[in-house]
Length: 352
Image (cartoon, rainbow, N blue to C red; front, side, top):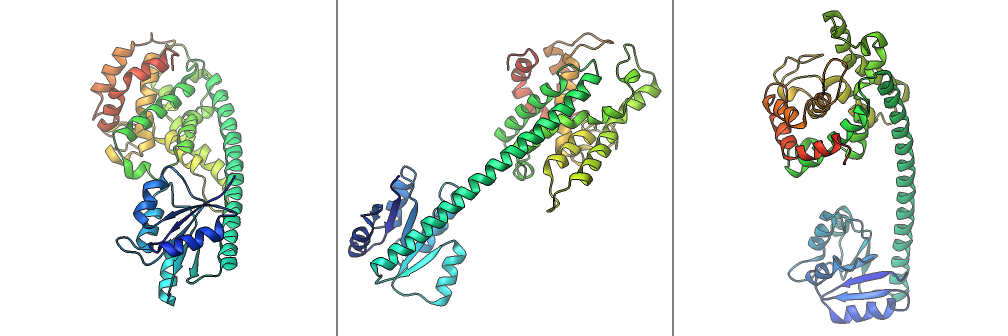
Protein backbone atom coordinates (compact mmCIF):
# COMPACT_ATOMS: atom_id res chain seq x y z
CA UNK A 1 0.00 0.00 0.00
CA UNK A 2 1.30 3.45 -0.96
CA UNK A 3 2.59 5.43 2.01
CA UNK A 4 1.10 8.87 2.65
CA UNK A 5 3.34 11.85 3.40
CA UNK A 6 1.96 15.15 4.66
CA UNK A 7 4.04 18.21 3.78
CA UNK A 8 3.13 21.27 5.85
CA UNK A 9 4.84 24.53 4.83
CA UNK A 10 3.56 28.07 4.28
CA UNK A 11 5.88 28.44 1.27
CA UNK A 12 4.27 27.16 -1.96
CA UNK A 13 7.66 26.63 -3.61
CA UNK A 14 8.79 24.33 -0.81
CA UNK A 15 5.54 22.40 -1.08
CA UNK A 16 6.00 21.88 -4.81
CA UNK A 17 9.67 20.91 -4.46
CA UNK A 18 8.83 18.28 -1.83
CA UNK A 19 5.99 16.97 -3.95
CA UNK A 20 8.22 16.56 -7.00
CA UNK A 21 10.93 14.79 -4.98
CA UNK A 22 8.57 12.36 -3.29
CA UNK A 23 5.74 11.74 -5.75
CA UNK A 24 7.37 8.77 -7.49
CA UNK A 25 7.41 6.72 -4.28
CA UNK A 26 4.79 8.28 -1.98
CA UNK A 27 1.37 9.84 -2.03
CA UNK A 28 2.09 13.45 -1.09
CA UNK A 29 -0.56 15.72 0.46
CA UNK A 30 0.58 19.39 0.74
CA UNK A 31 -0.77 21.88 3.30
CA UNK A 32 0.02 25.59 3.55
CA UNK A 33 -0.83 25.65 7.27
CA UNK A 34 -1.03 23.36 10.29
CA UNK A 35 -4.73 24.16 10.56
CA UNK A 36 -5.27 22.68 7.10
CA UNK A 37 -3.45 19.52 8.15
CA UNK A 38 -5.60 19.06 11.25
CA UNK A 39 -8.80 19.37 9.19
CA UNK A 40 -7.88 16.29 7.14
CA UNK A 41 -5.87 14.17 9.54
CA UNK A 42 -8.90 12.51 11.16
CA UNK A 43 -10.02 11.19 7.76
CA UNK A 44 -6.66 10.45 6.12
CA UNK A 45 -3.92 9.25 8.45
CA UNK A 46 -0.37 9.94 7.15
CA UNK A 47 2.57 7.61 7.61
CA UNK A 48 4.92 10.56 8.13
CA UNK A 49 4.68 14.36 8.38
CA UNK A 50 7.19 16.89 7.07
CA UNK A 51 6.47 19.93 9.20
CA UNK A 52 7.85 23.43 8.75
CA UNK A 53 8.97 25.03 12.00
CA UNK A 54 8.37 28.70 11.22
CA UNK A 55 4.77 29.30 10.12
CA UNK A 56 2.25 32.06 10.90
CA UNK A 57 -0.73 31.40 13.22
CA UNK A 58 0.54 27.99 14.39
CA UNK A 59 4.22 27.10 14.18
CA UNK A 60 5.63 23.61 13.89
CA UNK A 61 6.33 23.24 17.59
CA UNK A 62 2.73 24.06 18.53
CA UNK A 63 1.45 21.69 15.86
CA UNK A 64 3.67 18.86 17.11
CA UNK A 65 2.43 19.39 20.67
CA UNK A 66 -1.16 18.96 19.47
CA UNK A 67 -0.25 15.85 17.50
CA UNK A 68 1.38 14.29 20.55
CA UNK A 69 -1.58 15.12 22.80
CA UNK A 70 -3.95 13.07 20.62
CA UNK A 71 -3.71 9.29 21.04
CA UNK A 72 -4.75 8.86 17.41
CA UNK A 73 -1.83 10.91 16.04
CA UNK A 74 0.86 10.76 18.73
CA UNK A 75 2.79 7.94 17.04
CA UNK A 76 3.01 9.51 13.56
CA UNK A 77 6.71 10.28 12.81
CA UNK A 78 7.35 14.00 12.34
CA UNK A 79 10.39 15.44 10.58
CA UNK A 80 10.91 19.17 10.99
CA UNK A 81 11.75 21.35 7.99
CA UNK A 82 13.65 24.51 8.88
CA UNK A 83 15.77 27.19 7.21
CA UNK A 84 17.83 27.85 10.30
CA UNK A 85 18.35 25.89 13.47
CA UNK A 86 20.33 26.32 16.66
CA UNK A 87 21.34 23.61 19.10
CA UNK A 88 18.68 24.67 21.61
CA UNK A 89 15.95 24.63 18.96
CA UNK A 90 17.00 21.17 17.83
CA UNK A 91 17.00 19.80 21.37
CA UNK A 92 13.58 21.37 22.02
CA UNK A 93 12.14 19.75 18.90
CA UNK A 94 13.44 16.33 19.84
CA UNK A 95 12.07 16.75 23.35
CA UNK A 96 8.65 17.43 21.84
CA UNK A 97 8.88 14.21 19.85
CA UNK A 98 10.31 15.07 16.42
CA UNK A 99 12.26 12.18 14.88
CA UNK A 100 14.56 14.26 12.67
CA UNK A 101 15.39 17.70 11.22
CA UNK A 102 15.96 18.57 7.56
CA UNK A 103 17.55 21.97 6.88
CA UNK A 104 16.39 24.07 3.92
CA UNK A 105 17.39 24.23 1.15
CA UNK A 106 17.44 20.45 1.16
CA UNK A 107 18.90 17.89 -1.20
CA UNK A 108 16.33 15.65 -2.85
CA UNK A 109 18.27 12.40 -2.28
CA UNK A 110 18.99 13.36 1.34
CA UNK A 111 15.33 14.18 2.02
CA UNK A 112 14.24 10.91 0.43
CA UNK A 113 16.77 8.90 2.44
CA UNK A 114 15.73 10.57 5.72
CA UNK A 115 12.08 9.75 5.02
CA UNK A 116 12.84 6.17 3.99
CA UNK A 117 14.87 5.63 7.15
CA UNK A 118 12.10 6.88 9.41
CA UNK A 119 9.38 4.88 7.66
CA UNK A 120 11.53 1.75 7.89
CA UNK A 121 12.09 2.35 11.60
CA UNK A 122 8.39 3.05 12.12
CA UNK A 123 7.48 -0.20 10.33
CA UNK A 124 9.90 -2.17 12.50
CA UNK A 125 8.48 -0.59 15.65
CA UNK A 126 4.92 -1.39 14.57
CA UNK A 127 5.83 -4.98 13.76
CA UNK A 128 7.62 -5.43 17.08
CA UNK A 129 4.75 -3.81 18.96
CA UNK A 130 2.23 -6.07 17.23
CA UNK A 131 4.33 -9.12 18.10
CA UNK A 132 4.61 -8.07 21.75
CA UNK A 133 0.86 -7.47 21.89
CA UNK A 134 0.27 -10.91 20.38
CA UNK A 135 2.55 -12.51 22.95
CA UNK A 136 0.82 -10.54 25.73
CA UNK A 137 -2.58 -11.79 24.54
CA UNK A 138 -1.29 -15.35 24.55
CA UNK A 139 0.08 -15.00 28.08
CA UNK A 140 -3.18 -13.42 29.28
CA UNK A 141 -5.20 -16.17 27.59
CA UNK A 142 -3.09 -18.81 29.33
CA UNK A 143 -3.30 -17.00 32.66
CA UNK A 144 -7.06 -16.51 32.38
CA UNK A 145 -7.45 -20.15 31.41
CA UNK A 146 -5.50 -21.33 34.45
CA UNK A 147 -7.43 -18.98 36.72
CA UNK A 148 -10.72 -20.17 35.25
CA UNK A 149 -9.79 -23.80 35.88
CA UNK A 150 -8.76 -22.99 39.46
CA UNK A 151 -11.97 -21.01 40.01
CA UNK A 152 -14.02 -23.92 38.68
CA UNK A 153 -12.27 -26.31 41.05
CA UNK A 154 -13.18 -24.04 43.95
CA UNK A 155 -16.72 -23.64 42.66
CA UNK A 156 -17.22 -27.39 42.29
CA UNK A 157 -16.13 -27.98 45.89
CA UNK A 158 -18.86 -25.65 47.07
CA UNK A 159 -22.03 -27.33 45.91
CA UNK A 160 -24.15 -24.31 46.80
CA UNK A 161 -22.51 -21.75 44.55
CA UNK A 162 -23.28 -23.07 41.06
CA UNK A 163 -22.12 -20.50 38.51
CA UNK A 164 -21.43 -17.89 41.18
CA UNK A 165 -17.90 -17.07 40.00
CA UNK A 166 -18.87 -16.56 36.36
CA UNK A 167 -21.88 -14.43 37.28
CA UNK A 168 -19.99 -12.23 39.73
CA UNK A 169 -17.31 -11.58 37.12
CA UNK A 170 -20.03 -10.42 34.72
CA UNK A 171 -21.57 -8.24 37.45
CA UNK A 172 -18.15 -6.72 38.12
CA UNK A 173 -17.79 -5.89 34.43
CA UNK A 174 -21.21 -4.22 34.36
CA UNK A 175 -20.40 -2.17 37.46
CA UNK A 176 -17.08 -0.98 36.04
CA UNK A 177 -18.83 0.07 32.81
CA UNK A 178 -21.38 2.13 34.75
CA UNK A 179 -18.81 3.57 37.17
CA UNK A 180 -16.77 4.80 34.21
CA UNK A 181 -19.89 6.15 32.50
CA UNK A 182 -20.80 8.10 35.64
CA UNK A 183 -17.15 9.23 36.02
CA UNK A 184 -16.82 7.77 39.52
CA UNK A 185 -13.38 7.02 40.98
CA UNK A 186 -11.84 8.10 37.67
CA UNK A 187 -8.38 8.86 39.08
CA UNK A 188 -7.99 5.39 40.58
CA UNK A 189 -9.51 3.41 37.70
CA UNK A 190 -7.48 5.36 35.12
CA UNK A 191 -4.38 3.56 36.44
CA UNK A 192 -5.93 0.13 35.92
CA UNK A 193 -6.08 -2.15 32.91
CA UNK A 194 -9.62 -3.48 33.21
CA UNK A 195 -8.79 -6.34 30.85
CA UNK A 196 -6.56 -7.53 33.70
CA UNK A 197 -8.69 -6.42 36.67
CA UNK A 198 -12.01 -8.00 35.69
CA UNK A 199 -10.70 -11.56 35.09
CA UNK A 200 -8.75 -11.39 38.34
CA UNK A 201 -12.08 -11.17 40.21
CA UNK A 202 -12.53 -14.90 39.54
CA UNK A 203 -10.17 -15.58 42.44
CA UNK A 204 -12.21 -13.73 45.04
CA UNK A 205 -13.23 -17.01 46.73
CA UNK A 206 -9.90 -18.82 46.31
CA UNK A 207 -9.56 -18.97 50.11
CA UNK A 208 -12.37 -21.54 50.24
CA UNK A 209 -9.69 -24.10 49.37
CA UNK A 210 -8.73 -23.91 53.05
CA UNK A 211 -12.27 -24.61 54.29
CA UNK A 212 -13.43 -28.15 55.07
CA UNK A 213 -15.99 -29.68 52.68
CA UNK A 214 -18.08 -30.59 55.73
CA UNK A 215 -18.49 -26.92 56.58
CA UNK A 216 -18.57 -25.63 53.02
CA UNK A 217 -21.41 -27.95 52.01
CA UNK A 218 -23.29 -28.24 55.30
CA UNK A 219 -27.02 -28.30 54.43
CA UNK A 220 -28.20 -26.66 57.63
CA UNK A 221 -27.40 -23.52 59.56
CA UNK A 222 -23.77 -23.08 60.55
CA UNK A 223 -22.68 -22.89 64.17
CA UNK A 224 -20.84 -19.79 65.31
CA UNK A 225 -17.57 -21.74 65.21
CA UNK A 226 -18.29 -22.96 61.66
CA UNK A 227 -19.27 -19.50 60.49
CA UNK A 228 -16.08 -18.04 61.94
CA UNK A 229 -14.15 -20.68 60.00
CA UNK A 230 -15.98 -19.74 56.79
CA UNK A 231 -15.06 -16.10 57.41
CA UNK A 232 -11.37 -16.97 57.26
CA UNK A 233 -11.63 -17.59 53.50
CA UNK A 234 -10.97 -13.90 52.88
CA UNK A 235 -7.65 -13.79 54.71
CA UNK A 236 -6.77 -17.29 53.53
CA UNK A 237 -7.37 -16.15 49.95
CA UNK A 238 -4.98 -13.24 50.43
CA UNK A 239 -2.32 -15.58 51.85
CA UNK A 240 -2.69 -18.00 48.93
CA UNK A 241 -2.35 -15.22 46.36
CA UNK A 242 0.62 -13.75 48.25
CA UNK A 243 2.32 -17.13 47.96
CA UNK A 244 1.60 -17.27 44.22
CA UNK A 245 3.02 -13.76 43.83
CA UNK A 246 6.21 -14.75 45.64
CA UNK A 247 6.63 -17.83 43.45
CA UNK A 248 5.83 -16.16 40.14
CA UNK A 249 6.94 -12.55 40.58
CA UNK A 250 8.20 -11.11 37.30
CA UNK A 251 11.66 -9.55 37.11
CA UNK A 252 10.24 -6.02 37.06
CA UNK A 253 8.26 -6.78 40.20
CA UNK A 254 4.91 -6.21 38.50
CA UNK A 255 2.00 -8.62 38.52
CA UNK A 256 -1.09 -6.45 38.53
CA UNK A 257 -3.35 -9.44 37.79
CA UNK A 258 -2.52 -11.12 41.09
CA UNK A 259 -2.38 -7.81 42.97
CA UNK A 260 -5.97 -7.04 41.97
CA UNK A 261 -7.01 -10.65 42.65
CA UNK A 262 -5.70 -10.28 46.20
CA UNK A 263 -7.75 -7.12 46.74
CA UNK A 264 -10.92 -8.88 45.57
CA UNK A 265 -10.21 -11.94 47.72
CA UNK A 266 -9.23 -10.17 50.92
CA UNK A 267 -11.72 -7.32 51.07
CA UNK A 268 -14.99 -8.39 49.43
CA UNK A 269 -16.60 -9.01 52.84
CA UNK A 270 -15.65 -5.65 54.34
CA UNK A 271 -18.57 -3.29 55.04
CA UNK A 272 -18.78 0.47 54.60
CA UNK A 273 -19.67 0.96 58.29
CA UNK A 274 -16.74 -1.13 59.56
CA UNK A 275 -18.69 -4.22 60.66
CA UNK A 276 -17.26 -6.50 57.97
CA UNK A 277 -14.25 -8.80 57.94
CA UNK A 278 -11.38 -9.65 58.01
CA UNK A 279 -10.02 -6.19 58.98
CA UNK A 280 -13.14 -4.24 59.91
CA UNK A 281 -12.19 -1.43 57.52
CA UNK A 282 -14.54 1.52 56.98
CA UNK A 283 -15.54 3.66 54.03
CA UNK A 284 -12.83 4.63 51.58
CA UNK A 285 -10.25 2.64 53.54
CA UNK A 286 -11.74 -0.45 51.91
CA UNK A 287 -9.99 -0.99 48.55
CA UNK A 288 -12.23 -0.20 45.59
CA UNK A 289 -12.03 -3.80 44.36
CA UNK A 290 -13.56 -4.98 47.64
CA UNK A 291 -16.30 -2.34 47.59
CA UNK A 292 -17.33 -3.28 44.06
CA UNK A 293 -17.21 -7.02 44.68
CA UNK A 294 -19.30 -6.59 47.84
CA UNK A 295 -22.30 -5.49 45.76
CA UNK A 296 -21.82 -8.17 43.10
CA UNK A 297 -21.24 -10.94 45.65
CA UNK A 298 -24.19 -10.10 47.89
CA UNK A 299 -26.58 -9.70 44.95
CA UNK A 300 -25.67 -13.14 43.62
CA UNK A 301 -25.91 -14.73 47.07
CA UNK A 302 -29.36 -13.22 47.58
CA UNK A 303 -30.86 -14.34 44.27
CA UNK A 304 -29.30 -17.83 44.39
CA UNK A 305 -30.82 -20.88 46.05
CA UNK A 306 -29.02 -22.34 49.04
CA UNK A 307 -29.78 -25.48 51.11
CA UNK A 308 -30.77 -23.20 53.96
CA UNK A 309 -32.85 -20.67 51.99
CA UNK A 310 -34.97 -20.05 48.93
CA UNK A 311 -33.68 -17.52 46.37
CA UNK A 312 -34.78 -13.92 46.84
CA UNK A 313 -36.51 -12.24 43.94
CA UNK A 314 -34.53 -9.72 41.95
CA UNK A 315 -36.73 -6.94 43.35
CA UNK A 316 -36.11 -8.05 46.94
CA UNK A 317 -32.36 -8.24 46.37
CA UNK A 318 -32.33 -4.72 44.86
CA UNK A 319 -34.27 -3.44 47.88
CA UNK A 320 -31.80 -5.02 50.33
CA UNK A 321 -28.79 -3.55 48.53
CA UNK A 322 -30.44 -0.13 48.32
CA UNK A 323 -31.17 -0.21 52.06
CA UNK A 324 -27.56 -1.24 52.71
CA UNK A 325 -26.17 1.89 51.07
CA UNK A 326 -23.89 3.69 53.52
CA UNK A 327 -23.96 0.72 55.90
CA UNK A 328 -22.88 -2.42 54.08
CA UNK A 329 -22.09 -0.81 50.72
CA UNK A 330 -20.32 2.18 49.18
CA UNK A 331 -23.20 4.62 48.39
CA UNK A 332 -21.74 5.59 44.99
CA UNK A 333 -21.42 1.97 43.91
CA UNK A 334 -24.99 1.33 45.02
CA UNK A 335 -26.09 4.23 42.80
CA UNK A 336 -24.24 2.66 39.88
CA UNK A 337 -25.87 -0.69 40.66
CA UNK A 338 -29.36 0.82 40.78
CA UNK A 339 -28.81 2.42 37.37
CA UNK A 340 -28.14 -0.99 35.79
CA UNK A 341 -30.04 -3.40 38.04
CA UNK A 342 -32.02 -4.62 35.01
CA UNK A 343 -28.73 -5.83 33.48
CA UNK A 344 -27.97 -7.74 36.69
CA UNK A 345 -31.35 -9.42 36.41
CA UNK A 346 -30.60 -10.39 32.80
CA UNK A 347 -27.36 -12.06 33.90
CA UNK A 348 -29.12 -13.85 36.75
CA UNK A 349 -31.69 -15.25 34.35
CA UNK A 350 -29.06 -16.25 31.78
CA UNK A 351 -30.19 -13.66 29.22
CA UNK A 352 -26.86 -11.77 29.15
